[in-house]
Image 1 (tube, one colour):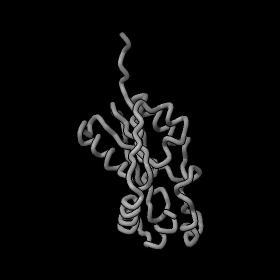
Image 2 (cartoon, rainbow, N blue to C red):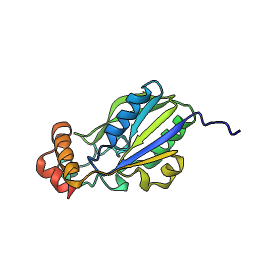
Image 3 (cartoon, rainbow, N blue to C red):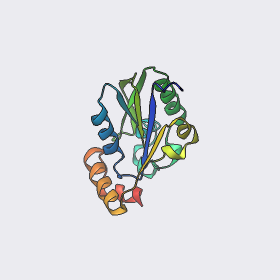
Image 4 (cartoon, rainbow, N blue to C red):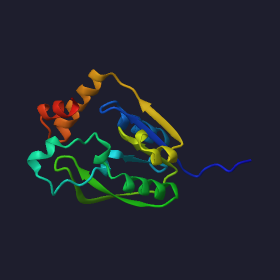
Length: 164
């Protein structure tokens, strides 16, 4: 008999506004927060606080180069090994990492969600379960508009330009 793994990694991918965060929260609610932690790919955006703020609307946050993959993979390996990480909080309004940290771990189930996580081989190789949330484009756009205007200090024009 093969011993069971102590920890599993569930990857949840899908387009912007597809429902990845909702799916991750449903797993957390179903299993319990003592056993599950959620990592968001978005928390690993590079800090852009030193860039010209008026030009940040031109930055493509949906491109693989926008993410600090090495740090994300390192954090996942630590969590999968039973360790604890200090995850810096990312502020979407300023495009910067704040001075705040979330302490995560140890957990038996780690859920990673993000639009590009299945594109990264090192992440895929760590995942035990891979989920892709497929949602109609018009619904995703409506969700993204609502979220980014309400929570991320974007204008409708900025959201539409980035989405396009």
